[in-house]
Amino acid sequence: MKSKVAEAAALPKPSATPEASQEPKREEPVATAVANVSSFSELEPPRPETLLDMAEAEADKTLLGDYIDTIRVLRQDKGFSYREIAEWLSENGVPTDHNAVYREYMDWARDPAAYDLERERDAMERAEEAAELGM
Image (cartoon, rainbow, N blue to C red; front, side, top):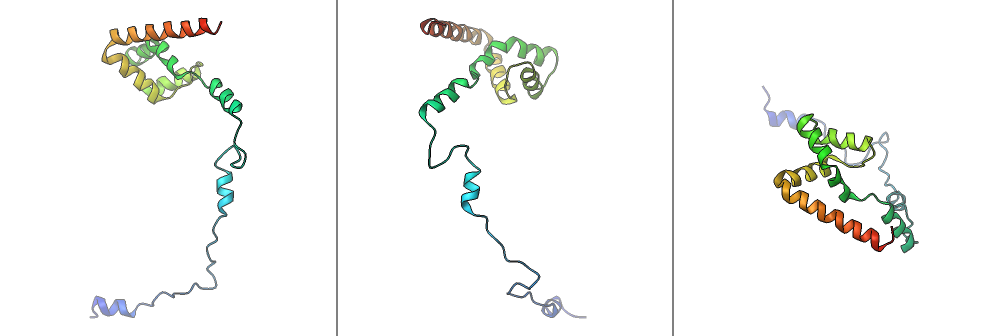
């Protein structure tokens, strides 16, 4: 009976050089990978006006609080998960994700009276800003 050391010594040793059937690794050019990361050219940054227009076109994420009663009904009365609520809201014109729904719901659940007061203040501030802008 051979010992395990003797059996291991009898095994063929791997070659240090690649065999003809193996192809050497080829690295991807770095410039190709970088070009796919950004929609803007790194040599020519976007104009400030372009970014400002893009920022103004983004949805106002603070408006999710306006739908807290809907979120509460779907969560408490209908038993929806936060993901299901987010999907339902998104399908009905309120783009959101489950994390935002969860945070908004938990803010309300901690202290409903304080939450309602804060939402009223936010609504008054938005109305004042709109009046100042002539909207």
